[in-house]
Length: 390
Ligand code: PLP
Image (cartoon, rainbow, N blue to C red; front, top):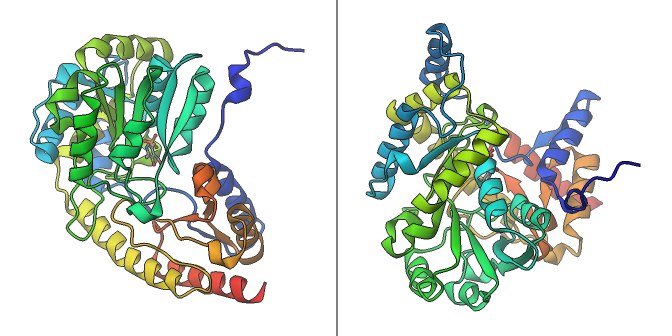
């Protein structure tokens, strides 16, 4: 009998990967599967980004890089941050990591321990809760409500802070709801946070560029009063269709930067050089492909919302960001995870049950519209067939 530490009995998962595996297995067995489950752009990484990685390898960039990332890549992040937020950060506060998740991991293990409380959005990205539980800290869900446009409420968030709260996790634009929290609400939250100077903040802004209908993302970086305890998570995965490259960045306050650098040295040493050169090309190169992708997502978003609202028992609020719809299925009388699983097995449509994103996800499913219009329409047809006939 091996005695692993109890933390490994508490660690959770991201069910989107299990659904992807099942959808792939069904497809390999000959079933026609439409995958609206996984959260990754269906576009290819733009050519000039791929070429930059190939060139880097040809130029001999095959060795270790600094644990914090190449200075040139960190400087590219500084430029990108300035363009997006008007805030000039120092490259000495920028970390390059293998994807967005390692920042989550680093921030949560830095603040989580038995007796501590960490606030996280529910429904929200499942890894937040999983990692909080891993550390032994108490996960405290911040409800993200449909009636509030799937934005977080400053008042409710602040009301959940206790003297044991160490970290508050925020995410806008949000997975799985597509919610974008308005600036006024963030203003209120930050004003309230001034009363709790010992609470660190992890702001997951990985979908920052993905907003619609003139909606604008507000970065937490634009609030000087919390900068000394703010970690901003971002990355290349979604914006430049680079999920498999494992390229993320984050901005850390001075007091924490050396801690995360040391964690990197211990865990992954560094991010591979060709990906970092690709990351520079992504930031500094033409953004036409990003704009093209966003126009496609916007068109699909409209099709998805209209199609979902026409289904019996389903209502769908218009998502303002990311590339997810989070329809309310309560009136179908079905449980969300059962519906997701039946729909995949019987109709070959993969989506994710809301409870995979938290307790408040019951009554909802997440559908990623990172798929072709044709496939989205076919999936909607099949879902209608399923809801009316099964
Ligand atoms: N944060 C959010 C809100 C996400 O939705 C995701 C991916 O789905 C990530 C972080 C992780 O991104 P990465 O694949 O770069 O680790």
